[in-house]
Image 1 (tube, one colour):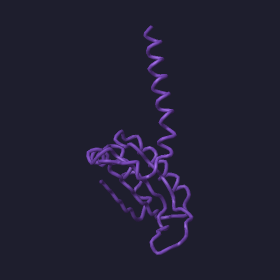
Image 2 (spheres, one colour; image 1 turned 90 degrees about the vertical axis):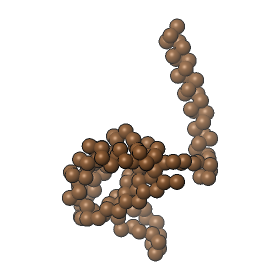
Image 3 (tube, rainbow, N blue to C red; image 1 turned 180 degrees about the vertical axis):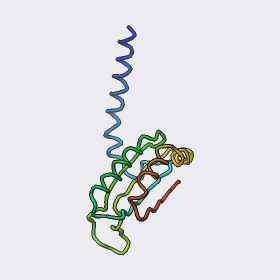
Image 4 (cartoon, helix red, strand yellow; image 1 turned 90 degrees about the horizontal axis):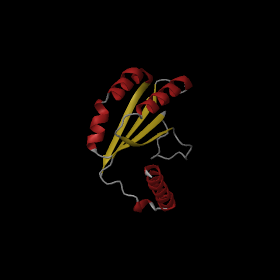
Length: 136
């Protein structure tokens, strides 16, 4: 009987989640609020921007860093092929965006052993790093 109850709870939860996905997918940007969330966006300029091995090493290290439990959302990216304009900067090598529930989550991340190790093991790869943190 317990297994059946557990199965029904999981089925109900799955059905509810599946039912909400189209709503979330079609929500307008103004309808999605990130109250209290802290966005941590880091741009890396590699010392050797054309060195694919260095870029792969940095991306692997960033993916490993995502194991920090306070990270709620992440994106690792590269300069897009958008048009050149005065306000668009395509000069960076890798971007890393992560989101935390709050300032406390970001504070934990900064001193986390994985983050400390990331900096120690990979700082020789970059020439410049710029961080933009935002909070509502």
